[in-house]
Structures are given as structure tokens and as C-alpha cells.
Image 1: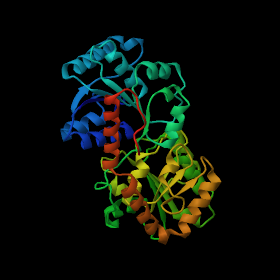
Image 2 (image 1 turned 180 degrees about the vertical axis):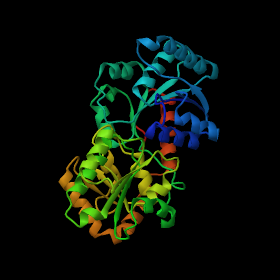
Image 3 (image 1 turned 90 degrees about the vertical axis):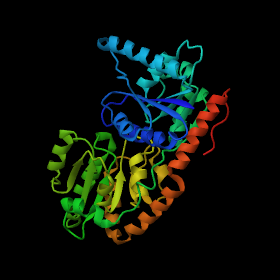
Length: 380
């Protein structure tokens, strides 16, 4: 197959970059792949480094001020589709989905359009109605929760496959504690401390501030025994100021953007993803679990689909600071048992999170949409 991926995210790109790079690595030995994304996107940088897809620089800009660039990009994309005989265009966001729909309009040989929904935002808008009707042949939902959202939207008329995000189980594997010792020493030198880490990012909707607020409510001396570290971009200064107001500057640590998050994950006793918006199923959660870290997640979107409560992680109510604090206190009391819970997290990852399953089901989705007419969902 000849597959064109589109991604409107500039810069780091977060989970979109992980999703697309993972698919490209898995499918490039068998298919011809192309990736359209902004010039400064991390996904294009990764693909160039690894040589696993042909990069195509498309800004996916919007607004009247960029109409000239939009028209040029549209012609570039349309020409590429015609020149290479693209079979499938796989869109990953509203903006690139719209441009892909416009680029294939009226083509004598129109490629099939597949759309992956990566967030928990409502799809009940005019734009989604138009794209569902004219620009979508098949939809991928990255969690069961996402599928239910799509069934309550204009996409309910499209075949929908649930294909949960997969991670590289060889890359994200348990490592010796020494691999994270240097970073852990930056967080704390207290051998009795509980260190909670998250590579889900510093955006406000990731809920890390709720964990800080929860730590602030813990009684002394427990309050001083709990540290948290977050990897990602510079956080909102207002939230950093709140951390200071809570008296937690020495216990809430920001690791910055990391090329390799494995030593960071290894520095913690457990992970956390406490999102309350946008989230679907979380690559970050699955990466931490694959590395043998149990994870505390909020009861939001598809996050609970990763966790067997108490066996490989914990589920807490969304934005419930008191409940989060109670769970943190329980984790501190059972911190000696956390490595065992982490082994269960790794076992679940091996069973359900692998790239082979992820890529096989995505490939099956492509084959189904090419066969047409629309049929049943790909079996998970």
C-alpha cells in the first residue's frame, strides 16, 4: 500500500508524534509511506533520522492571512497524491483532515480517507459533520470511550475500529534502578521518599497540579516525604506560582522536554496521569506501565481502560483532591510493595500494549477500507 499520513502539529507534537512514528516504524518494511507535517515538527525530524517515510512539509495553516500558503500546500498535497498513486490518506486532526478532504476532492482515482480521533473533544460540529460525510471512509478510535463518543456524533455512519495505542515493548522495558538514580537524586536524597513521575506533559489539563494540591493537604511528616516530577514543556507560570504558594517548590520538579524519557520514568516509584480534558488513552501511561511502573490515573476518558484497579495501578475520581491525597497516602504506606505492582503493569503491557498488535489492527483497518464497501469493525 501507498499511505500518506497527515499531522498538523508543529513542534513536539506530543502523542501524535509517538502514534505516527510508531506506525511508520512498524509498517515501513511492507508499505510505501509519506508523512505530511509542518517543517519544524518533531515527527518529520524522527522520520528523516530513521529513514522510514518520505517527509512532506505542509504547514496546515489556517486563517485569511495565510490563504496563499494554504493554496500552495493544497496543490502540493494533491500533486503528491496523484503522482504517487496514494491508496490511503490517514488524517490525525481536524485541520489536516480538512485539508486532506479538499486535496482529494474530484480526483478520478480518489484514495480512501482514514481518520484517527486522538482527543475527547466533541465531534458534534459543522466541520466534523462535513468531514464525516465527505472526507471519511473509516474511523479509528483509540479507546472504547472514544468509540462511544464517535457513535454520538456524525461519524456514527462510518465504520469505526477500536485500535488502542501500542508502545515499543523492547524500548520501553523495565530497567535497573541505577539508570534513574542520577535523576532521582535531583528530586530527593531521602531513601524513604515516595517519588511519583509523569511523562504525560505539563499542560494544565494533564492534572498534575491536582496532585500538587493533594500533596499539600497531607499531614506532616508525610507531606514532606512525597515528591512529584513532570516531564514536558515549560509549565504555565500561574501553576508554577501556585506550587510556590503551596510551599512545594522543593517537592514538585520539572524535568523539561526529554529526548529519552526512560531514565526519567526509572527515577520514580510510580507514575501518574490525572488528565481532566482532551485525553484519550495516553501513550505516557502505557509507556510507564511497559517500563514496570504502576500508574495512578484519573477516571477520565479512556484512561481507566489501562488499569486493573489495585493490581497494576489505581483509578481516582477526576479532579478530586481529597481522593488523590488518600491514594497517595496509601501508596506511601505500601511503597515497598510497589515494584510488585509494577511487574503486573509490565505483564499487562506485554499482553495488550505491543506495537505488533497495534500495527496489525491498523493494517487490517486499511485493508478493510480498500476492500469497500464499508463493512464491520476490525476485531480487537
